[in-house]
Image (cartoon, rainbow, N blue to C red; front, side, top):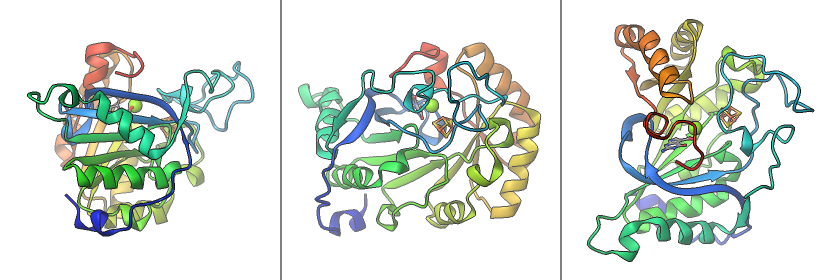
Length: 267
Ligand SMILES: Nc1nc2[nH]cc(C(=O)O)c2c(=O)[nH]1
Ligand code: SF4
Ligand SMILES: [Mg+2]
């Protein structure tokens, strides 16, 4: 838990933020794989994975081998972004999350101690995350932020209770390098001491690019995460990446929610 977060004045910023989903599940990826979590999915992203630029119409085919699995949070050419979205204050988000924790209604059940913040790109909504992080610290919970590592975190978020599952996007995303690799943000996240670099892998070329990024930025803890929204695809990617990961000293996660529920939303 974080003394820093507790000592900052309660952030009064309560402007509503767009929320795509709030749900209770297992953390499906990474160092806390399989751990029960309360998840928040923000609307909006600053990247367009699968496309060189934001598609103007739904007909434009994806150009990358890696395609965003949450296009409904940003791709207005394909999705009605207002569908199911709610604008909630950060405290409203927190209250709903806590209501999803089964321990709230049934105190004999162990409380959920992990909050996963994702999107879209959650660091577009840092004031709200700061509020969630503070509430988490006050209640003995910790936070993981699933970020594309293009935005420098607010220094107030750099605290022991807040970890970054940071996944810079690779050439296979089709996004131009200047947009997807932001050296200042990568360095700030690595310097936090709270980074787990979690790269989505879909091709062998991805593995070479990850090794280059590791050398360029001195990334310490690397995780590979298999691209895919079906169990077959996830397993294929894991088999493709496994020996390379072991040889390079990298960890390999699966995507547990995909193995259990396929590509279903809010799982
Ligand atoms: N269960 C579950 N765990 C997750 N961890 C990261 C997720 C994401 O979409 O960023 C995610 C997700 O969508 N579901
Ligand atoms: S950064 Fe994440 S949410 Fe944004 S387009 Fe890429 S995969 Fe999708
Ligand atoms: Mg995801």
